[in-house]
Length: 130
Image (cartoon, rainbow, N blue to C red; front, top):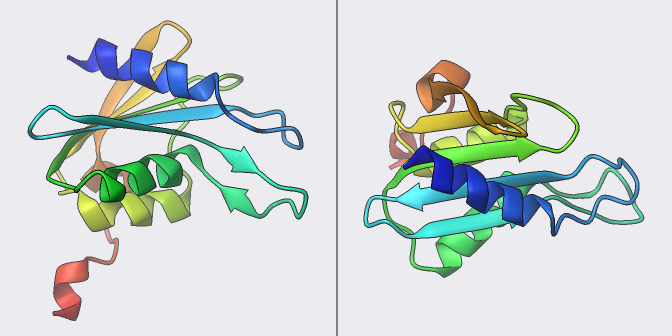
């Protein structure tokens, strides 16, 4: 099922608004019940303000009702195996488990599969604040 998530990220990347960095990124996440939420990076004139593709996808996910995230795909037009930035790793960790699969893609598909725990082994967890 990872290839369709890659395709969703690629479709999202085509909608990126990156006039300053010229670095389009797309992200897609899948919930346990099969729903897919996508996002692209969006830059604004007060660069580097704006938001990342993963953040956009998370916004759609929250507005769509949330759920357990089981897979994430990230794709950048100009960089193979682009991983989420540090801020996005923390944002994703808020809604994922350490074993959530993260697909790092190149222009042909999934190039490497890691877990969120691999990417952010000492991240903050919301459950410690309860």
